[in-house]
Length: 315
Image (cartoon, rainbow, N blue to C red; front, side):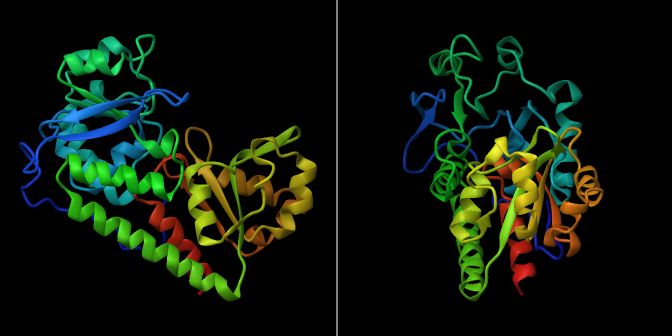
């Protein structure tokens, strides 16, 4: 999701992101499951054969000019943001369609790709994609983004971007990005000192048995940090239609999570066809926006564009 007028620049590299590290090996801690188990992964050299197992990781590498490291993609659930399309096209043409999977990958296929680094969700066990020790024996480090597992917060994003910066020798760029994001959060906070703004983040369309609203995802924590109010912070995925009707009049901004068959038009048209929902300020004022799944569940660099939308609304 790119806000109107947003400045979105792919970082260009300065040639210092190859080879070994001037200050010695880099060790990070990665989750291996959702039960709190972790593993240390040590990088002796900057990875050159990276597989990404989620759009968030893909967008991060493209944004920081690291697309030339990507040799495979799985869980490709959505289109990359418009301003990263050129970088993605270069990757896709180079690696070929057989190295781009829309769903999960098997351990055998991932092994055949011969990566030296995999950045994904947690799947690091013998019963799934293989344990960290399995991969380390093959000269590969596996890594799960913390924001997608156990730190869905600005602190988790800071850690993920610090690790990206250190491991790929792009620390100046990742630090600059995080400074810009912090500045944007402060800008929204300042605008909300004398105002209020509420939002809902919907996945799918309203159904008779209820509707799915996000309330505990990564993006919710960022908007909470800004002081924006989630109308469904206490209901989430189990929101009934009755509760939606009761609170529709308090929704200033509607974000629609778009992936697969979920589209902005389908959701908004469903709201407009319902007399109660059509009266929501978000609909009557045209304040409804698409949001990629990768922004909602992980520290995608386009999160800053979501905050630009809020700034535009508040100014």
